[in-house]
Length: 179
Image (cartoon, rainbow, N blue to C red; front, side, top):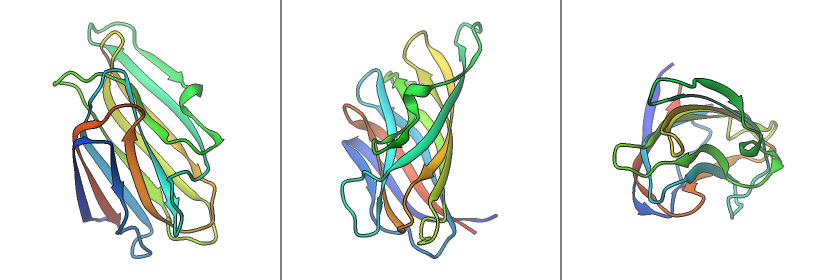
């Protein structure tokens, strides 16, 4: 497997980070490396949504699952849990990748989202994501695992990342083609 850097997008008090070019049939899958995504407000949720080719609004139908592992900074209370609130059953909201994020300067989300066969006009589009961040309540290090599909057979050519309230204060998203 080889990664080819296609584009880099840097947030600076940004409402969204939208990638509106570069997702083409050149690669069968794409990786989005989210590096030090910092919430502008405390208790914020970070997610993504896509557009089918020619569509607008970042509101494609998603079915997903979301689970997490966590451990407190104090070293106690490890936990693994399925999070029904953060998955979707044919929903059109932004798919959560991290929730209740701290906005302290030493806390941010980093992870990788992989989108498979976005240019296919035959099949739905599958995705997987994993990441790590500090959850705001109790100072937990939290790993998230998200998987699902975008229920369209139209090609996907745009992706958007945003917080559910407030801005992406800082951070970088790099888009890679996978070959």
